[in-house]
Amino acid sequence: MFQNIVGPSTVNDIQPGDDFILSILVYRPFALEYENKFGTEKMRFAYEIEALSSNSLTEIVDSIKCFSNECLFLEVPDTKVDLNSERFDAKKKYPSQTIFIENVFYNDYRSPHAIDLSQEVIKWAKEKNIGSFVSQSMENVYLKDLKLKLGYPYVYIHQGNCEHIIAFSDAKLLAQPSYSRNFPRISSFSTKYNINCFLCFHMLARWMVVRCERFPHEKVFLCTECCDSYLYLDGKKVTDFKLYPYKNDV
Image (tube, rainbow, N blue to C red):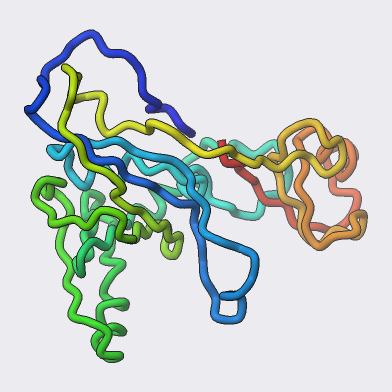
């Protein structure tokens, strides 16, 4: 998933003092429910993005990586399905995304199928007298145009209800010649805790099995080999269950 990690370049088109670098902390998706607000689940740092002040908001959201953009989690009959087909293309199916910064929802309308994810929130906030929020397109909006608060939490929303807290943690002048096309870039990331197969405990899980009487839990995660050998015989299910593709956070 992380394909734009910092790497060397051969062309330096910006010099020290020409621009400044903003550090953006991106957190894992987290849904806080009132009943669980005192629970153990907390926001967890995912990775840090370095961006130039001349980068646009569309470039920023394109650099945010999330497993929910990788594949639609639809029920499938077996492990032979082509997860790279258009049917499972999450970003193409649900292209709408927005980023909330300083009382403004910046919506991505680059896709003709995109919708405004902010209207219901704006309406709700107005009814509750929480604040007066507005929405606009994120195209042609650059970081240097925004009045940002360092360390202040903002929100990135995509795939309908997948929400990430983001924060601009630092700003510094460019200290050495750099290549503008290297930005934005992921400069660091946290330790990832992937889920291994429930049966072999060795391979990464690729499938989620739900409501299968052959397991003691309502849902378990399996690798392809174990799923095929334990739950299928001659290509047919040996018992009733639901099968979904699963993407580890890699």
